[in-house]
Length: 227
Image (cartoon, rainbow, N blue to C red):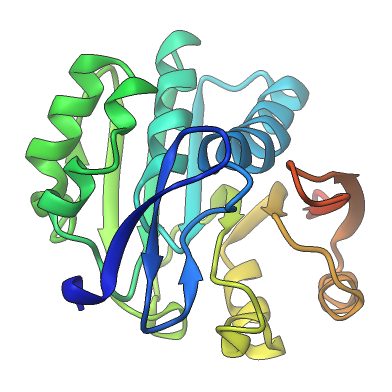
């Protein structure tokens, strides 16, 4: 599939990838970096950490893609001396060569970036230790085929838009992924639709509208009540 992938520069100067087969960018054309930072790191990870004060956090990302959400999250955890256990689900993992073309070394520490590129192929097979208690595993399978006993503090739901990948936003997929969320855990995504809100409410989550990233008025954050 690599011949169908093209590096594209977004509005904030950061790069993303265009997938010609899907007809979609991996990040917002209004800015890959600002979207990842706002939607997932600030509205997801930082929000959770501010409320809990934990020193270990686990994240499940649906749609690992270029790894930008992981890299920004890892840098924050390193700065705060927090252990990060990160699992990504990606049915069509990118190659290390494509990762290296993203230019994300500009936004993360040199040590993390180099270790990430070196161990990325191994992370597609098993959980690997990177730097400063940062663990990464990437499951190269579809969401519905992903099955683990582990539960997560935060879910980054970063699938392609429903117009391009509708099956990822249907009830079966949403029910499946929410099953991996711990009580007190946080679900964040760039999108907000009435259907998504209804599904999450039916699963017992508390819905919050949050300001969206550039180009979007709102985004969705949902919290699973403590048991």
